[in-house]
Image 1 (tube, rainbow, N blue to C red):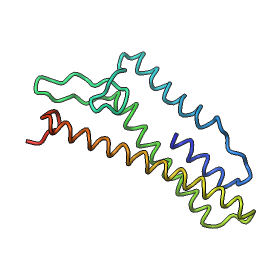
Image 2: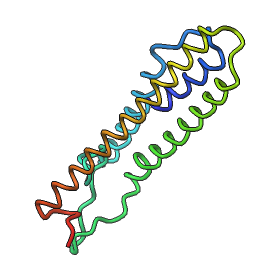
Image 3: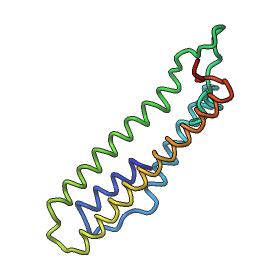
Length: 152
């Protein structure tokens, strides 16, 4: 969704009177998620992860309790997440730069594009803040229970 909305935001900043697509971001996000889920199911790698944040099954730990490197997790979760977040950031910065130059067409169009920019940035911040707080709470609970990631 972040990438689809960033593309839409840049388009609105460049073409302020174009009506944004209501379906395209949803189709893109569901197709990408569905495609990676289908690949994981076909490969027999779908299931709960070690950290509980994605759908790539965690590999079994070795005899010392360490988990081996998992290409599926990196190829279908971490790498796409980093690429999408980086691309969305670049697109957001391009839209902000475009808006900073002003849109000579009308103040209404400028206002609509700026409102879309603020909403997308707020959504990104809210998502990562909520994920970060949730992750910290999980780590704290794990440490208190003496589980993986516990200090000492």
